[in-house]
Image (cartoon, rainbow, N blue to C red; front, side, top):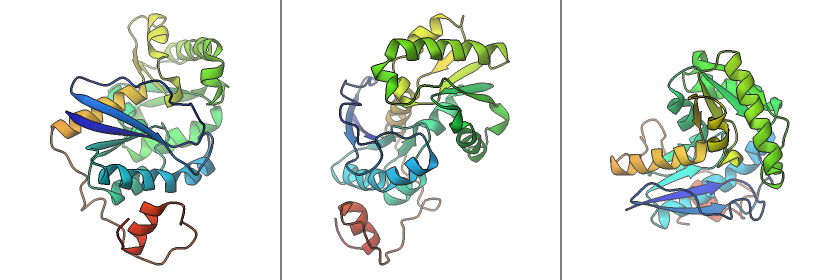
Length: 244
């Protein structure tokens, strides 16, 4: 049995209230951060979320988690979390883009994220596979409160990018959890990737294969004086070179 710990990097209560899908032999737990943004839609939001992500990752490893999933398609704090722990840390964005395997379009919440997804695709060596990013004009937190409208907009956006040449769809927000079934029914065989369940499977497989974070690529940070991070006790302890 693998233990996959999902870090939801926002402070909004109830955003991950329902149980998450898990492959056979996998126990999934979820935690949200305590200090940070209410949703992640910008680079500033990513920065605000990152300390809480790293802090939660350190705690998860100490508590016995076998792998971590960062519950956001923009992969906030991913490299930092990998530096902080030895267990695998899976970014939903990286895992989803790699799962596409063909020309893919990102259908996301807001068009302002177009640059961010272009940067991520380039970072992962997949820039040539990203055909476009299309925002449906619905913010993250409205994906649940206005679910029917959000699903309809996601279907319409997905149809548009397929007409322009995309051969698979990657949802650009983990808040679109559960949209894939309705979208797939309208796309006649086009591959649709729901990023959070996909990342959980990747994390479970990493545990089953005995993978660890490569510390030559992601070495632990050197201890140094930091200020203002008392609320993130595990991260604070890591940077000061003391036990959390």
